[in-house]
Length: 260
Length: 209
Image 1 (cartoon, rainbow over the protein chains, first blue to last red):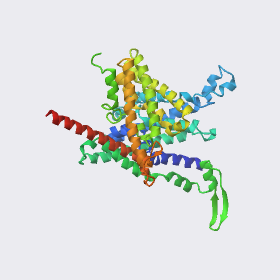
Image 2 (tube, each protein chain N blue to C red):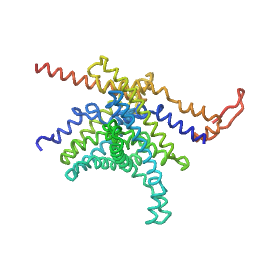
Image 3 (cartoon, chains in turn blue, green):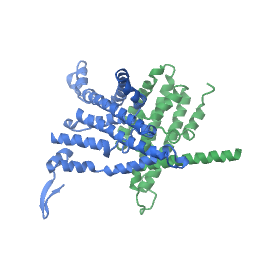
Image 4 (cartoon, rainbow over the protein chains, first blue to last red):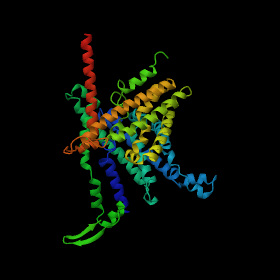
């Protein structure tokens, strides 16, 4: 239980700050450059992305776990009607993942837009412009792919991400995006008053500022391993979390030390 | 279609005058993410060339069947199919490179360059023009990626295509191969391109005046 909470906490910190979607993975750069002129607009965009990314993460987690992975219950059940059970257990639909995700994202954006327009008109007014744009935002697909990599790519099925981890990654990824774009908008509002050389006006100066911002965010590097050490005091627990082999403890002059 | 650009014009425009990265600022995500060395930049260009060419040709073939409100979905599904093919191909034959590029190959699906070309060119013009346009745009994309990757790799590691070009005493600017280096290099290069364009326009104006 403690390990699980530590895991969740670390995924959250890592997604929001250390491996910030924009400044570390470069996804969602288009709105980051395009919609970061005013703080209110940037905040609206950030909220819309966080909202959609959570829904997309929920859908893609469900699709991956129940349909796509080898031996997923739903695909196994359907295949069971046509082929013998031992063949059905091997059905692997991961090759379809990209097509399925992009369909799921664009249709969920469509539905969210319709739903919000019908039931929350004020919210629609503030989100409206950005919602369709979000379909082609790489951050959403990136979150889905990260979740898939952590379900399909693991060796031990017990390590596969559950819904909680996937949602935390998505929500805090969105929060990280909002933080980055709001900081950027704040800087750009001030930049309007500065005397920027003509060739650098617009996108060029935005990217250079983003570079300096990314330098600042590099300061968070390594915070996750430090936090993990602080939160899991004993060596065995830490090894269990990181999947490392437990090293040998040997007695030295200055006390016990870990070898290996 | 007299008012539409011809194949040759489409091809030439993609390379510099309408360069997808520097002039139109499209497809920024791979531009920044895979340019820390030349090899991955070239592989990425190859993947984009394949996907863009196939998607453009297919879109152009079915352009008369497209319904306006469904076209974006059709484009995206076509692109996703070819991206899956490219991704499986890389995983089979260039496994190490496929590991390095990681999620950025599937992210070609949402790369605005490809949707933009399908929309602007392929859904209106014939197959040959669409193919020429795809090749031109990919070359432009490749030039932009190589320019950024060359600066970052040489300054960051002192090597070019993993061959040492700067003396061993060169203090590696590690920050250039890290994320901030991508933003800084790209920002400075855009500034340089803008400055050059302005300079040329000024010179042309002087000659005319």
